[in-house]
Length: 392
Image (cartoon, rainbow, N blue to C red; front, side, top):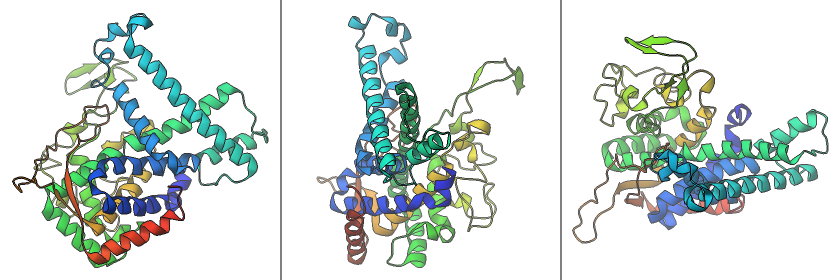
């Protein structure tokens, strides 16, 4: 992951973003599906060099999250039901089948990548290549392994792949929603993009010059956290917090929703205010704006956890969310969908989610219109270019 970050993920994010813009232009009503597929394609390209797995990757991630969540099988809340005999336990049978199919899919991708590694045509910018390279350095030049070793490795790469979908897709969907609900913020970000980029699509090279875009994205993650309860930790020793005694072994959740609304740090915490990251006087303001705000460092990094369990994907989130946000705002105007009968905006409930362990908004409707004929032409040109480079 660290090496991929140094190379800005080998340009995969920018190429997939050009494809995504083209799809939005051609069929904007499917923006939610395309957003999840976009995340799946980026991760599948990094894992196996096979972006065609993107849609299946997104669907697999969504099903896995559903099965882990309170909103999923009833056995997640009425846990004694899990111990019913298999013939009377449809939830158990479904999970066994789901796990078997997912494992087989990951193992198939792993073995295809291994065959390519042996032929010498697996790109060195994939996680599979890095793994096989390590196996080779340990003296196993032919890459022969036991089935247990293959299953373990394929699941590790596969799960890393899956996590990069479920943790990024939600923030991107919330970002599109936030821009539609806050047109004043959208206009400010677009003005900044137009000033810096003109009629070319933004890239990672514009990161330092687009602080307003970064602020809108970071404020989205604060305003509508994908993991509002935080990630579970376990107390390593007896402790005490504000008079509450915490015994060793206790599971502790740092509630992200509450942390993101502490009044002393986040005044007007329930409101979407990107300026809190841009203007002196706000507690979260940091200089220089060519560097801050970002997701790698600085204020409000509890989003990604702490210590040894800090999220490994912070750099990927920083790159992927920035390029996505800047490119979408460069190309399109986002508004709530108008009712065809009344002409009134169709309401969007920004707190309605799928109630999974990692949240995404419930399906909502947007009006997505290209900002100008010239931008539309550039979007289609970019789409045609990547059609020759990507496996679509």
